[in-house]
Amino acid sequence: MREGGGLCWGPSGRVVAHRLPKPWQLFVITTVDLTMAALNKLIHALQAYPSVQCSLNTNQLFLFIDLCCHLRQELLYTPGSSLAIPPLRLPDNIRQFLVLCLFPSKTSNCLSIIDDCWKALSRIIWATHDRVAAPSMLDFFLKYGVELSLCEQHK
Image (cartoon, rainbow, N blue to C red):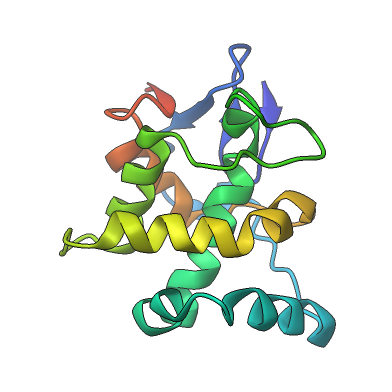
């Protein structure tokens, strides 16, 4: 298994989520400082998508980026993607996963927001290699990822 900052990838290339005993200090917590240049790229990329600007707060935006960065291995199996080129469209199970993670209490119009967010940020996400999954992401994968075939749960 390859480590992925709190989650691991199994031999199948899928995320393997382990329910670990508390305390959560068993995970390595890594934060990435966002440079002004990177922030400017994000702002510039989002300018063409007012629906994303109006619908996501900064926590949701960075959660979207972190989850998509962590799902890169899964996204590599999407037709039209490669190590250099992100897929044009997210697979339905990943779109639904992102909706559940970012908008747990509402569902209307959320898929279009996810689609616009991917259109705006896919190239930035694909070029980002230094973001590490936070421990809180394990909960998202355990809660939504197993049912949507994004991870395997091992106890």
